[in-house]
Length: 231
Image (cartoon, rainbow, N blue to C red; front, side):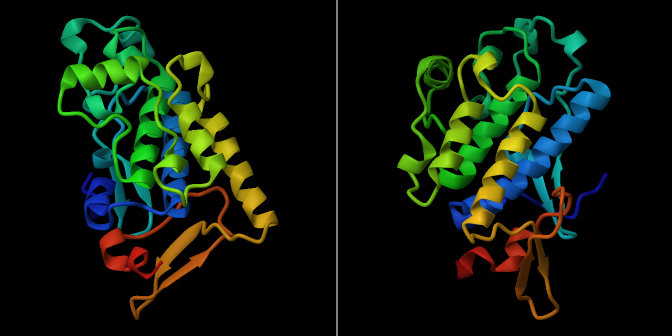
């Protein structure tokens, strides 16, 4: 399938940091896709990262590159020859060649969420060994301590997604979605509007609305919006 859009990694190169409101939209959409993939086919993606999340010109967000995706029956125990993925976003169990399931994808999605709102990967390093050790043992610096505009509640969600022990994370994408929706509802009660749909009008101006439930169409091509530049 040809996708007319850009990866979130390109948006990060241009804008450095994605405001948490927009980042939440992307994460909710991908979590929704992961839930569908797991529920319908038992698929574990195994390589979630900004490069594999596409924002299309039609306003949707797509998870791409299923080259490493496997069903749980195929990854009961990873072998050294199956050790593939993107180290900056890989779960501890992936590094340890342990069993991986949807909670590994949740960890990688958390690492992606972290990168979007802070502008840096959770464990910056030039050494593969150091990155692996950090993912396995080192506590992640909470995102709100790096980017003070990130709400504490969002920071806690991200750190829970990235817990070392899979049992301590959100157990399913639905659990994650519920937490993000609860955050959005609380912000709305406080009078803070979290956009649920972003569209581009003929004059190139951005209009955001919040009447879309669940989040299916989120935002259009970042580089055409000029949206972040106006924040």
